[in-house]
Amino acid sequence: MPVGTQGTVKGLTPRDLVDGLDAKIILANTYHLFLRPGHERIRHAGGLHRFMAWPRAILTDSGGFQVFSLETLRKVTDEGVLFHSHLDGDSHFFSPESTVDVQLAFGSDICMMLDECLAYPATRDQTLAAMRRTLRWAGAGYRHYLRREAGLDCALFPIVQGGMFADLRTACAEELLGLGAPGYAIGGLSVGEPRELSLEMASVSAALLPEDRPRYVMGVGMPEELPQYVACGVDMMDCVLPTRNARNGYLFTSQGRVVIKQNRYKEDDSPLDAACTCYTCRTFTRSYLRHLFQAGEILFSMLATLHNIHYFLDIMRRMREAILLGNFPEFLKAESGR
RNA sequence: GGACAGGUGGGUGAGUGGUUAAAGCCAACAGACUGUAAAUCUGUCCCUCCUUGCGAGGUACGAAGGUUCGAAUCCUUCCCUGUCCA
Image (cartoon, rainbow, N blue to C red):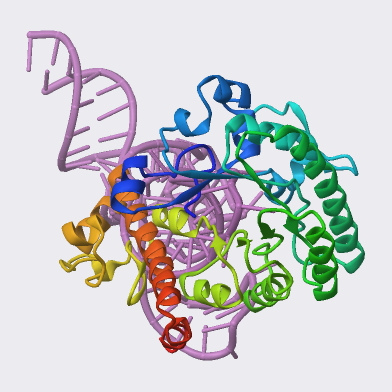
């Protein structure tokens, strides 16, 4: 899922995402859209889909990640999270119930439960406390959601926490199963821990979640990691890497990374990735892309993002194809040998 | 011809006697980025050497002299640039 935090996948139009890239679903963010332009504004505009002219599915994160990323601007209590807006310092209290309400106002297809995302490393006690809070919020939020959701056709995913402790992950997942949710997320990863640990924790968590419902690992990963997550039973991922790195000149290709600003691309008139079929690779040279980057041109961000998203979505498309054809194990083997 | 103003590292531009190999910004070069406070952030950025260190030499603030223990900073002459006046 491409990430479109503020109601836009930076650098791309919805038309790019649908026609060129065939993205099925994108992410948006409760905290950011609540602060600006506000969920009531979005509701009055006809919901987030209409507001941002996005015809396909939207998953909204709850603000749980901002508990981690805006650590210095918030205070967590058993009742919820008090944020001090990074825009103007105003206080806003996010509860399990209010974050459901805000996401319903957006008209999200998939809402996320408010959770407490801890930084790495965290002690077992800290992790246990955060996990218990996340569970409590999940219960409260889910009850609220069941009362409110009728007829809205919106799913709510609870989030497995438990940090880097396998037994806490297990306990959290088992507890959440009682909610009978339409899908489950695995959160609290990509917060500074080694990559192998992320995969291990995702694997432990995913193994306990229902096979017949989407299992979503939040905030991963590098291209080579995606098949590994899928091999653990993961169905959905999101990550800012393709979009953010694109804007920073880091391009993912079938031959490895291309840091386009490097001098070696100055006179490279070959395509970015000869094996890629995206508009950027079909049309422009590395030399030109480097020029655009060095010149600080907006077009660079657009073309780079288009390519990186294409690259990530193409990996996912090939995996779906392999699964349907029954040869995912071969796919995995081939990918890990690269 | 005259009167002012000014010449600093790739660029711009601080610095008016010692803590200045010389701020900041830009450029250049390299690195980071994982449910986005990110079109962001970090590092390097005169040369040589080694025991790679808040290390040792060398060269450097238009040029040449001078004053001083010490000069990008003060003095003299010259060169150059800009603006204005004839």
